[in-house]
Amino acid sequence: MTAIATQILSVLTILAQAISVFLLVALLARRRFAPQLKFFGDNAIIFSFVAALIAMSGSLFYSEVAGYAPCTLCWYQRILMYPQVFLLGLALLRKSRDIIPYALLLSGIGAVIAGYHYLLQIGIAPELPCAATGYSAACSQRFILTFGYITIPMMAFSAFALIVLLMLVSRRKESNLTAS
Image 1 (cartoon, rainbow, N blue to C red):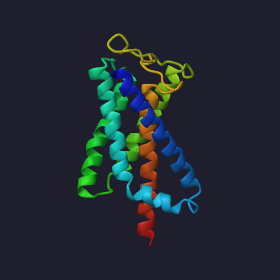
Image 2 (cartoon, rainbow, N blue to C red):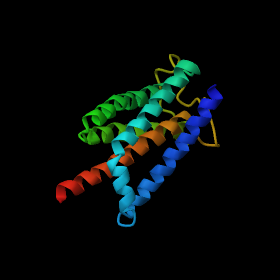
Image 3 (cartoon, rainbow, N blue to C red):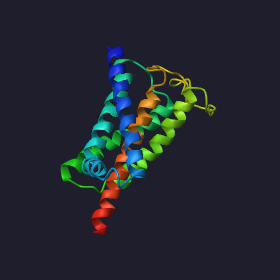
């Protein structure tokens, strides 16, 4: 069951990365991708909600079903991702875009932590002293590695980055609406 879930989450991670790369290119070449930016801007809250929900569900699966103990950096990422499921869900229900700056902040910080965590796991970043090691898994421990590069922190980074880019596209749409 863990292997199947990991494969599914890894494919979703690649999908999130592909959409993120597209959004980054589209933001840089706005005129060429105006219809696509409008589509993602109009649906940014729902796409972000789905990304956050999958990320939360995946992390809960790995800790509660697969039995992988979250490390300190994993807990920080959870602290930044889990509330977004509820905040983005509430924004969807209320049809409100007021969540944008908050989702940008939470996901921006989460992306930095997840990025560092990934670099730590692949041996590029130095490990900071971690007083919690012994009470949880070591932050450098890899529980999974799929497609030669996807680890749990890479999954989290991809979700955070996607949410950041979706919020930027949505924010750009908002500024265009207020300017007209």
